[in-house]
Amino acid sequence: MSGVFNLGLVITFLSFSVCGAISQVGKNSDLDSILGRFPGYHLQAVQELDSAARDFFLRHFPRQDPGIVRGDFNGDGNPDYALLLKGNKSTAQKLVVFLCSGVGQCKSVYDLDVTAYSDSVYLRPVKVGSRVSQTDAIPRNDRALTKKPMALGIEITYFEKAKVVLSWNPKLKKLDEMQTED
Image (cartoon, rainbow, N blue to C red):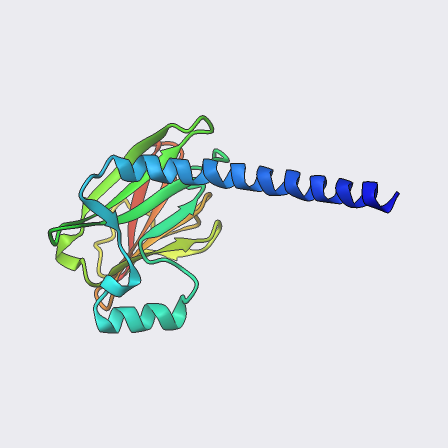
């Protein structure tokens, strides 16, 4: 009887392992598909930051990757991606944001050349509902001075230079930019 029980445990364990592996493959396939659109580029690694930015990042965010933020940026329940892509054979670097649907289709909604800051720029997530305030250095015209992202936001840090937060605007169906530090 205990042999049948043990076999049942092994089968149950293997079922959960296979299901977990399959769900992980689905998560990585979106990322692989996006990266495949940029031949000659790779995700920025922490080693590619200058020494001051690298030391700061490793000290404050040791378990994070400076080149990727994964989360639901537009509130549709599907994982989306913000990526810092660095040229394999050049100094070119770009920030791209992709919104993905539940059927594996990912659409580019943001593309920014950050080559001038390639050794000091990194990404961080901004939690839903976090208070984000515009820096005083920006002229105060019709732009909101403070807002709370309704979905996960993306913080772009230009180390010791500036910070910009991208958050989804559901009315305009696009990412809004707000410079939060200079």
